[in-house]
Image 1 (cartoon, rainbow, N blue to C red):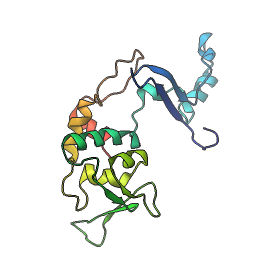
Image 2 (image 1 turned 180 degrees about the vertical axis):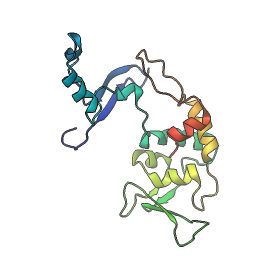
Image 3 (image 1 turned 120 degrees about the vertical axis):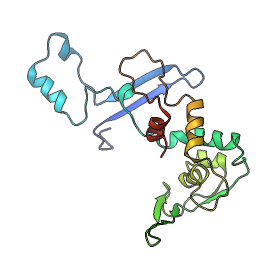
Amino acid sequence: MVASGAKRATGVAIQPQTGEVLAAVSLPSYDNNLFSVGISQADYDRLRDDPGQPLFNKVVSGGFAPGSTIKPFGAAAALQEGIISTATTINDTGLLVVPNQYDPAKPALYYGWERTNGLGPVNVLSAIARSSDIFFYEVMGGFTDFLKYLGIDKLAEYYQKFGLGERSGIDIPGEIWKSSHTGMEKAIIW
């Protein structure tokens, strides 16, 4: 965390076959012993006012955008719905230009993580392996001439089928979750 310059971080390691939580960390941490004998006002104020929020358990109570971890769910949905096959190829140029119907001179620009040249031709397998934003923008959102796409309602349906937006059942208090279709869209979909 120090090397990156980040003020806070969170991480969870799970057993992929069972979902068992093997380790979880929320940073910055603090010395729990401060509370064992009664914390001083000065120590509590320091923890409370820390911009890294050490008293906030980011693992169970933090609501974060999923980033590229959501891509396999969209891939599974697109394959199941017949939107794509494993042979479907899209050219990831590193940039997706979406026309602005209200002001054609100001299109929306969406960049992939490889902004200079893009990743080139990718299918669903290489798009996941290389984390192609452009592939998933097109397949999930239909922002270009790609003929079929999932769209927000179908994505939300599949996210729910995978259990996203539901309580995990972890036995730690304070778990954040979204129970409604609309809330899940705001929390999960780009």
